[in-house]
Every structure is written in structure tokens, then in C-alpha cells.
Length: 100
Image (cartoon, rainbow, N blue to C red; front, top):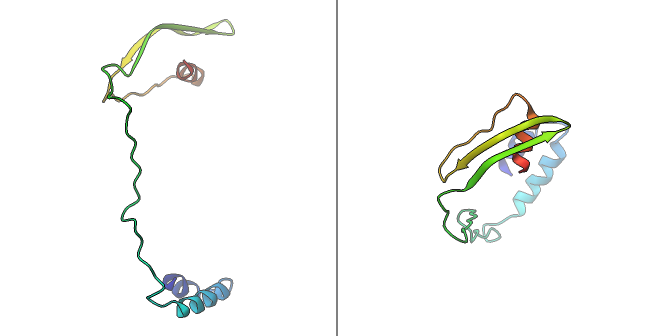
């Protein structure tokens, strides 16, 4: 609040807000401020089971859209720790692959 007051007290459009916050700040005592019980915000996800050797296995998939073959006999395996990027000149091909 102090930073807001110092920054905007001279600003014509924000001076009322700064004055209001200055009054609020004057009313606050140290006893009113209670320390948070949370030290750090944290979210943790636990897997139900450990990962296997193959996360994703695709074997010989093909797809034709409107008479045009966009995927032809595609095969690959993704394992834990693999870094993967799907790159194509045609966005329809990568979108179709992600829909499988």
C-alpha cells in the first residue's frame, strides 16, 4: 500500500485512491496483521502407479482426409524422459496426429 501511495499520490486520476489507501494504512495496527500459516504455495501430483517403459506407442497409423492421405504408416514410441516435437509444413497433419 505504501508503494501505491508513493507512486500515485501526485497523479490526478489516482489521487483519490491514494488518499483512501493512506487513510486505510493509518488505521491498520500491527496487531491487525496476522502472519499467514502457509509458507509457500505448493501443488503436488502423485502418480497412481510408476511409469512403464513406453509412455506412448504408435504403430503403423494412416489417415486420409477428403481423399488426401495426411498420415501414411506412421510409427513411433515415446519413453519417459524423451523430448518430442511434432513439426510439419501442414498444420492439419500435426492436428490429426494429436487427435489419435
